[in-house]
Image (cartoon, rainbow, N blue to C red; front, side, top):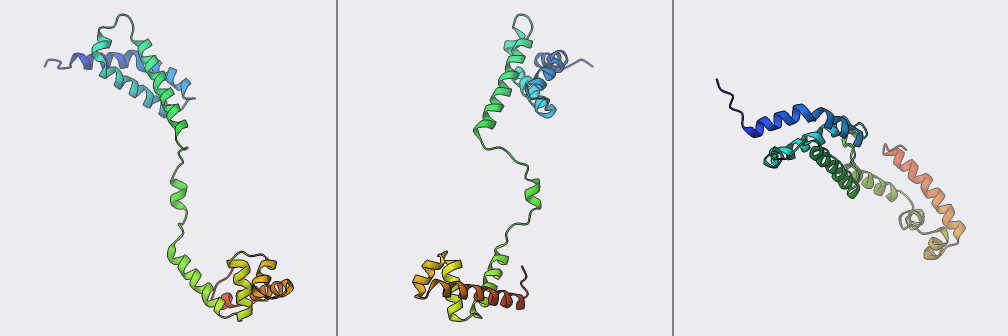
Length: 173
């Protein structure tokens, strides 16, 4: 049975046998020993050689300088593209982390709203002004029309009552 390989296949086989090993060693140094990345670069280099087989077949002398130049440019292009975009991260740990569930958030808000309803009007207002609206004690006192000491006292007792109300609902810190 006759060998039916094309001239391009013969050239690629010869290029691989003669240059793949030294090219892999060269590229490994360029990519700091990352074997997988080096193999990818060598594969891409040989793919480009296959695309340019007609030029390489007629080239005088060794094609190794051409292969080394192409490989070096592939490494440089890869480095530049990684610098131009955000660093890639392994999604594995993120898949293991529990995602915030909107149902849990909604239930938590409903429970807190119910517990706030158990507070007296004065305690609830002091808590809303300071914690939920983010006002200082002085600002809350001005809005509520009471002295700052009263706001501090109301917030203290409101938090204590809120904690007890949430514990009664099964919510623990």
